[in-house]
Length: 342
Image (tube, rainbow, N blue to C red; front, side, top):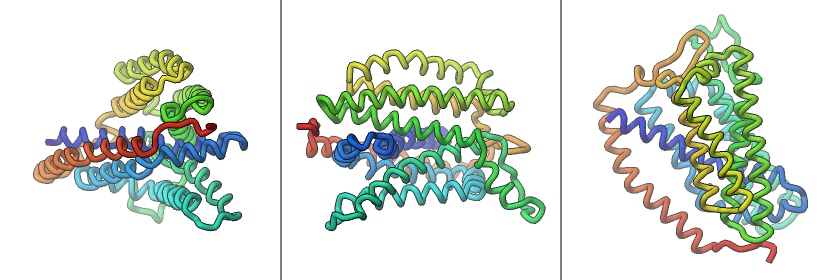
């Protein structure tokens, strides 16, 4: 049953990176749109974001609950040593959620709309950045595990491990991935000239994503980071990235020709390959501290707990997945694709 729990753990991670990424990326696409296209982007986002932004946090909640129950030692480390960036993540989610609602349902159209738009864009950008920085911290080898807080300063324990060049690059990498996913999604939800706009944006964010990803590996290599060194020596991880690079060609062609479904599938495969490469590099030692590597499975809950959790996840998955599919299908039926220039 442990493997069932592991499957749902990484499945939830994959779906949150994918769907949550498309959600956050919508605001990033709007942030980096020209002034002339911002209203167009805002209207498009409002029309197509519904099923994504309402449902994607389910996967984050499932992931948190699984870590809390099945892998408490990992959960404690993440919550304690990353409480600052994770608090900023929650703040960003709250800000963008409130701004998204009020900029569409506020009965008074005045100067406040400008602030709603700004807060939505800023929240959409900083949230994935801090999420990416949190992941980068877990594999950076800079976390200092200690219970004697009097001997080590607050900043050394709770700030410097996630405030550095490597974690900033991983944060920007995830933000770029979010923008890429959102622009790819919007290709299939628009037509005509509007589709061409998002096709160009998707191509730009693809290039940005590749460049930042290269910067992450280069910085980690030249600073002798354990995770990056091991990544470059792991055959399966390198094979996954090589396949991802090969698939960039058909992805680029799909974007250029504005194929919506093929582009989405290829984008999803890209995300899956990146996650696989990252996890496979050090599994089950997914947290690297300043003194050791922590085994995810060694800190697992007792078998009785894992068994009950696994059964619950199977039953819950059988209920949630069809409901999510129906939600997205129904939303697309209510809001058919259209060219907003018409």
